[in-house]
Amino acid sequence: MPASLLSRHSLETLAAFVSGNVLLAFDFDGVLAPIVQVRERAHLRARTRALLIRVAESCPTIVVSGRQLSDLAPRLEGVPLQMVFGNFGYEPPPVDHPPPRVVAGWVADLERRFSGEEGVVVEDKRFSVAVHYRHSPHPIHAHRIIERELATIRGARVLQGAMAVMLVPTGGPTKGSTLQAARRRLGCDRAVYVGDDGTDEDAFESAGPERLLSVKVGPGLTQARFRLDNQAQIDRLLVRILASRRPAITRLRSRL
Image 1 (cartoon, rainbow, N blue to C red):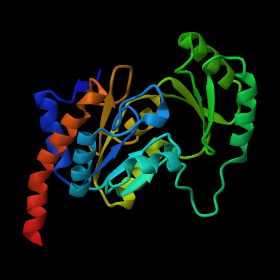
Image 2: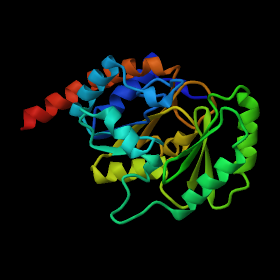
Image 3: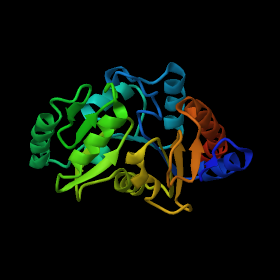
């Protein structure tokens, strides 16, 4: 079981970890922004945005989300992030790299399969597909049907999200590979990753504890090392990171 990140001993570990050459990485929904009934209304609270801006000014900070990049980027406008990744790391794609053709086929197939399921919505994200069931009158039943149908699709990885199940092509990037590639590209020795659901487990397992401090937001089984009880605690985490970064910033300025 992961330890509470806000316990005294865990906070000491966090402080030591983020005081050096570290990359900070966050999921969006359920981490930086509360989960909402209507996905289009998800946004950063004013205090979270203000704290995140200060954190991103103190050290390299990225966001890795399952949302499409065109949907995600405007929600983070004004935050000085080093990088923003959508579609679990598929976006931004390499130059002249179109979406996999297979995804469009999945969308058409799944829309047909779930056309009679009330409250089940198929979202075409071009590089991946999400099947949402948040508005189903029978979510447990809907989840069971979605899992059964998605298990029959070849060439796909199935990822469990918050009231949604995702399909991504096999062999492509994951949140874990995206996180570690960004860490190397930005020249960081370590990374902190904060996520909230099954799509983040790849990131939680992408490096050992000497290079990665992993944090799961909310309940549920996880490979993360630490846990926050709920999304409302993200501001407390950002405050702690800022407090731990001040000595490092002071040392850097003294050498300039």
